[in-house]
Image (tube, rainbow, N blue to C red):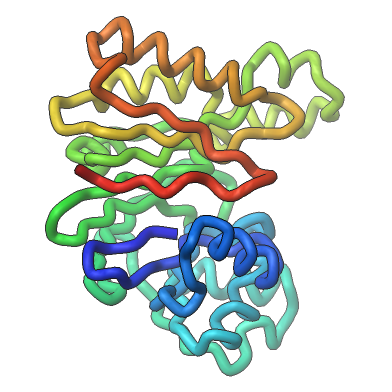
Length: 249
């Protein structure tokens, strides 16, 4: 969830049952009623399975590309978005949810139209990019002035290769349409460092092919090598619990 300076919030993706999302918000002192809209990055179930239920329950709009909306109904069945106020957006444009301005950009993933976001509220910028097998110049440009970076650090390559997944799935994950490894995330963080960057949040960690300490160690070494170890806060988002509230200075 992203909350603007005026207190309105946006839920980015909803891959959990609504009750679990409510519980996690309330655990960190956030009311579900703060959410003014649900924004979806792509149609995969771990990002979209709860969007219809949530949008109907709280009577808030759902934002996604036309391609993603079509795939959500194909994957989860017709009627998934019944009685949902749908507001399609296009890559390369902008849209607003409350006080928040979203600039969507394409990400390299095996989905119909996977996107990341540059999110601005007038005082700070959040760069949001998960589910990307590689990163383009456009991705770098959209994330370059972020005060807070929310980035995928999905797997440790050695764990993936030695792990239990079948080879077709291992190859999908490490492909340019798959997910960023810890090492690749570290390289991107190194490219995106700038004087106003305050926080990096590592996200979408695999519970099978990664460990929080490995992701943290990889990226912290990059920060230290670039003299930013004491200036940039580094956090790891966990799948099994709500994360801490992060505020831009």
